[in-house]
Image 1 (spheres, helix red, strand yellow):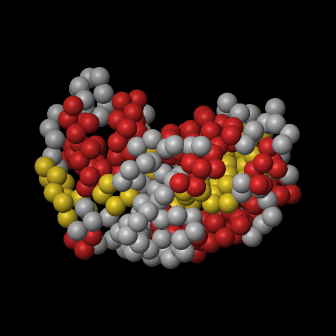
Image 2 (cartoon, protein in one colour):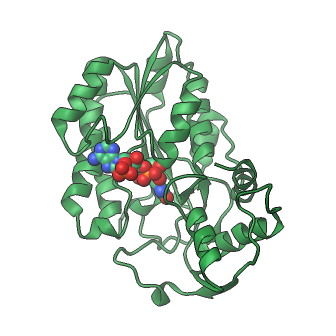
Length: 305
Ligand SMILES: NC(=O)c1ccc[n+]([C@@H]2O[C@H](COP(=O)([O-])OP(=O)(O)OC[C@H]3O[C@@H](n4cnc5c(N)ncnc54)[C@H](OP(=O)(O)O)[C@@H]3O)[C@@H](O)[C@H]2O)c1
């Protein structure tokens, strides 16, 4: 049976990934208690001890604003560790799956970003994630770098759960309406990752060669687009129609939603105005059609945590 090392098991994507990839092999799931991505020796020890056929790295320094004041730590985790994982994957004869972000782009483009567009990150988080993508690409190892966006789910720190908390505390919510992107459910990312591995024949002798042939960066986000304000409105609409006692997302009282500009909500890290990524490449290479963000949001809020 193949051995799959999932790093970041307590994170939004990592949690879903360990469940989805268990269908493909024996999952060894780790997080900060077992591995420190800021420490090269720790990374090497964990990979060598687990002797994986596949490494799926869903761990990262994801505190976008905090990264502005801790750029060295963010760089170690997001920029340097992926290169070490790539070297270790090569040494072990394994394949590497890694997640990247829409925040590698500056958001000035008027259309969805493709994998060929030149990244120009606006934030320390974006710069460190881009460094990680490049560190992997510099190693001759079969890899898939999956760039996703606006990740949410039933657990962890995310916009859905923040809006649900604020909705209980406040009568009015002021949400940015001039940044657009694709809210992507963590479970949809894990499902798509499993589907991509199956498409490449995971577990069969030709898998690693197939992955080497398809190696590279792929955008992987929900279909469609909205603003943070539009995302909040959809969350509140679901919550308003949910039945108390039946759904943990039901709200007794729905707050008033107000649209504001990015300038009215200053943050330490600058975000791209346009975060929309085109899924055309992953669709043509893997036949993968990502669900629309509204459909997944309904699914997530219907299925609970
Ligand atoms: N969240 C988004 O909106 C978003 C958007 C685009 C791309 N992405 C990318 O998608 C991937 C998954 O994101 P996510 O939202 O699932 O992340 P997440 O929920 O923040 O989970 C990240 C996990 O990494 C762990 N971690 C942090 N520092 C570590 C270290 N030094 N060593 C080992 N583990 C460490 C975290 O542990 P602690 O919680 O204990 O720190 C956490 O369990 C990441 O590559 C992220 O950059 C995320």
